[in-house]
Image (cartoon, rainbow, N blue to C red; front, top):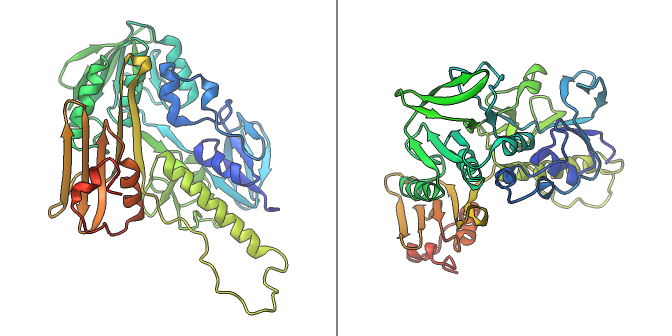
Length: 418
């Protein structure tokens, strides 16, 4: 392709696109692009940092280069090293930033010694450098990221306390029963879990954190605090350029922003009112955009519309129409000295009135399986422990096709009823 494509962001989405098309990729981290999903395994010592490197793009990545301004009129990107990069198409894959909660003791992005976000490889390496057996660590946030961080810290021998403001762990993905089983497993790793508790502040001495204060007056001693309170799309570059932004950078089915020469994919993109913040949708968006840009280049090629024979019916133009995202996580394992617990969740795990629910629980094997069916469609499910049926369930859900006329129990058998 002769079109100059510049991608801002060396994360999952940006690198995937760069693996499919020749682009100029600007990555603000000094490391080779890596799989962010595996950071907890690096923290736990299961993988070395180089093991989680992503396959190399078609063109070398410009590492440690941060885009600071987009000149839409000149179609250039200004970088913090003083260089300018021209583009015909610009792709924003700027990802997201960790949410820093409004706590006493936190001043903007200035963190006291011992307080760590958990979003990048540098965050992970900084944590590994300070965590030793017996260190008192408090994780703020009981979602997917917080649970993963707590498991990794426990594997390093830290005394871990996990705090969650909501009623249960991973409440966005799991129902009450699955969350309770997850809590039991996390506690078996040696993690102390507190739910329905709000962290109000941090205590410090000489610039270093010493404790976490809860809103009810309870105090948790802490030498290390991990902030796992979610992420927020990085939209500053797009907003400053005058693009349409809401929660994320707004894109259409062609993944175009309000400027037709600029696209957005991954954690920073908002499509049909939704920001996914997951690796699966980021990969799908990158693949869709690669197909879209290839199709446009083919249409624009000289002679593309000069055929004299009757034209074949036009194929549908590539488009992105959304992703059905499935969450998978493994807790425990050899590094923790305990049997691993696998979990998977997709769609709507909480039924609406009139939905059919099939649920199987095996307390002895710590296995839990549940699916929610609405009419003749599978709309969600949760599996813990035994994931043998997850492949068939995921295909039925992703395909959004009518289920076969058979007892619903067949959905939870090991072969998915096939």
